[in-house]
Image (tube, rainbow, N blue to C red; front, side, top):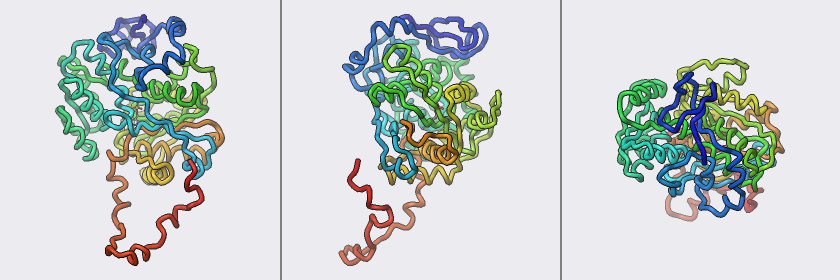
Amino acid sequence: MAQFLECRVCKKATDFKPETVCPFCFGPLEVAYDYPAIRQSLSRSNVESRPTTMWRYHELLPEVLGGTPTTPVGWTPMIRAKRLGQAIGMTNLYIKNDAVNFPSLSFKDRVVSVALAKAIDFGFDLVGCASTGNLANAVGAQASMLGLESVILIPDDLESQKILSAVCYKTRVIQVRGTYDDVNRLCTELTYREKIGIVNVNLRPFYSEGSKTVGFEMAEQLGWVLPDQVVVPMAGGSLISKIGKAFGELVKVDLVDQKPVKLFGAQASGCAPISSMVKTGAEELTPVVPDTLVKSLSIGAPADGRRAAETIRTSGGWAEDVSDEETVAAIVLLAETEGIFTETAGGVTVGVTRKLLAAGRLDRDALTVLCITGNGLKTPNVVAHKAANLPTIEAKYSAYKALGQPLEEKGKEHVGTI
Ligand SMILES: Cc1ncc(COP(=O)(O)O)c(C=O)c1O
């Protein structure tokens, strides 16, 4: 299948290579596909007959010379979120649960699966990333699986839990004094000075395509139907832009019917450059210095910020941001209602959904999907207060009974309905 890199600005074509900017005009490069040919050869039944991994859509992903990867990344659960819906007043709510993605429990496993496959194609023995935490784990895990050397650069203020898991992979973890944006600048320099494939720098055009599989899976799991509304957490702004691209591609290759889908972006108020851009109607993005406990979304100068804002605006959606307190309350609400324990980015998504509903931006009855992109076991610090005053009793029935009924405060009326 003919594929190439195309500049999003001047539209000139470049062969596949580990580069992120157009050699002619310095615009961003993106993978381009031969959609008419894909439409001829790809059908719903083809896709459905394939293994349940993100690579079942391989025609719409960068071609891998060594063959389509078989690592079981993606195909995460799509949950009908009735109880959360009842709690917040939505009647047709779903959760795309990437908190249980393989192997490192976040949607970043998808982007890394593509980036490392291309890194091998390009002959890199050493790969790396600039990370706010989840990407570090995804690169560490998959580099170990593939036998690649890896180096992970992170800001020096990340949650200890995220770093602990990252250091157990066969990787070199380096803490950099400064913000994610400082780390990113250093990584960009590394790609000029060393032979290294940095997944979100010189491999970014390939890496970012992996995010499309969230959108592909969403549509297939809804019965080859596009949702009406999607709420997506934003850091660099790539995920939301690529979910938009994925929906457009499914229509182009005739796998779903055309339908307007409103995309809603979610950020933490302490780092909300994209949400501010949408809310103020600004044409340019104003970078910020992050100040929030939502470390995974703490990117003050997002690489795809403008594109994310453009995607949201043209879809007819909106963006919003929430405080750290609202984020933590939303993490607990999701866990209480759906049994899904998410990290702070998921709290932002649920918190923003509530805020958008209150403002009348979201339709309560429309088919809505919330993207839960990371696992709560990575940021247990933010809910540690919940474990502070647990009842401790003697091993006697009377002591247990004296505590009262466990379900009393939570409301029993929905017990047993799925
Ligand atoms: C858990 C989680 N969700 C969402 C995002 C946002 O993705 P993007 O940077 O593509 O906007 C990130 C980015 O690091 C993340 O770690």
